[in-house]
Length: 320
Image (cartoon, rainbow, N blue to C red; front, side):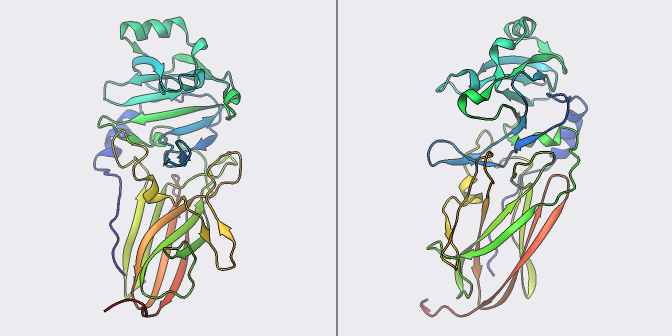
C-alpha cells in the first residue's frame, strides 16, 4: 500500500494562542447555539466551484440581537462588493492579538450610531457590545443566521468553535458507507492492484440542530502487514491563508459514483435537505489482503469507525 501525502493544519502553538484569546471571548448570540454550517462544510461558489464554508453559521431568527464576541477595532463594510446587497453586510473586529473576527449578515439599518462612531474614529468596541440584528435572509431564500469567521494573525481561517463554549454533544458521526471507486467512477468490489479512490460517505450531528454537518477529523489507515496512516484531515483551520477555495476538491468528491447495483450516489450540500458529503481518499492497492479502517470524529471527541477489506489480485492489463 502506497503512503499518500497527508495534509494536516500546522497546529504548532495554535492551542496555546487560541486558549489565551478564549478568556476574552463572549457569545455573539444569547441563548442556545444551533449550528447550520461549520468551517469545513463544502458549498458551491458559483455553478461548479466547490469551496469550504470557512466559518460557523449559527441559526437565529431575523431580528435576533448580535453582540461583539471580542474587544478590538471595529469596522463595517460589504464583504462581497460584487453583490453589494443588504445580505452581504458585515461588522468586523480586529483584536490587539491580531485576530480578525467577521460577523456576516448583520442588518445594516440596526447598527447603533455609537458603534458607527467607533468605526469612524478607529476606536475599540468592547466585548459584549450590541452590534445590530440578524438580517432577514428569507428574502434571498436562505435561513436567517449569523455567519462567524475568525482569521488568525497569519490570515488562516480558523475554527470558531475553539473560542466558543462547548456544545453538549454525545452523538458520534455516522459513517454511511465506504466505497472503492475506479477512475470511471464505478464502485469496485473485487479490485486488481492499482490506483483507486476510497470514497467515505459520512456526516456528523451537532445538537440541537437537525442539519447534517461535515466532520471535524477523518483518518484512514491500512493494515497490510503493518498499520500505515494513509490520509488524515483535522479542521482546526483551512490549509492556505485567506483561501477557502483551494484544496476543497482534494477533500470532497463532487462527481457522483455508480454503485454495484447501478444506482447513483451523489453529494448534497444544501442544509434544507438531507445532506451527503463524499470525502475522497486516493489509495494504491497492492496484491494481497488489505484492511482499510476509517475513523471519523467530531469536535467534542465522539468518534465512529468502519472497516473495508480487499483481496487484491494482480492487474492483468498492466504492463511490466
